[in-house]
Image (cartoon, one colour):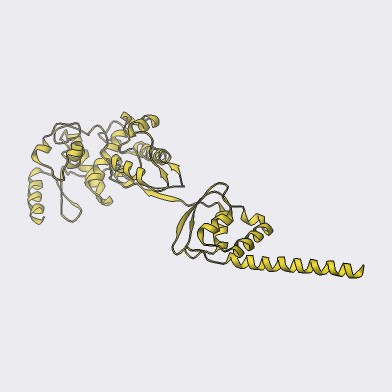
Length: 330
């Protein structure tokens, strides 16, 4: 009887020793570094097991698979991974990968919507951005859904960097950008200079889009705004080239001709009086602030000075002199 008990005890010790050795082996396997030469994104599908992930990241031999499976059984709480797209840093070990997939901290894509670009340019960005499901409806249809003025989204999406997770719908980013612009422009309209020759918040955005297209220098924007506001007050045409380009659409070939300046369309401010009917681009915060609070000046003209900024003039005579001066520099 005693011998039988000793035999059973010996078998138990051997089995436990084997399990401990296997457990040690499997723990060692966790520090193996799979084939991650560079940081990469990995999309974990619902129902996918950790062993399957490891197998995809590197070639596991039979002993490694058995060893890891044993470790998974011994540590079930440590293999509860969550579906999603994750960023796996280069040189991560299996233990690192497991920790990332357990965390639930999915990868955040980023999309920067640039100030001064048009709706059509943004639509292309939204359609091409990785991990983002492209828009399913036209800009006009989405504009109607959001209640945008004139069913037109031009100028009504705030330029910012937007973050999203894998398979986010583009309409979600569009909606966030629309509400961000709505919030900011409403605040600035409420705080605007009260003597502005503007009748609505939408006109504030239109003016901001002209400012945005004329200069990329934030500090110069209030002065550019003053020229437009002074002209509006005096009933002068705004005569800003970006509106000509926008009105030409696909017909614009990179150069503005005399015929272009005379083209009769709703956007050509060399022909029409006042503001165009819609924004001509997406204005950023600085341009919107400049439209709401223009600098107090007596300027009615400006011309590019060749260094990225502009030279401002009060009279046509001064302006013509500046044009001759800076055209020679070019």
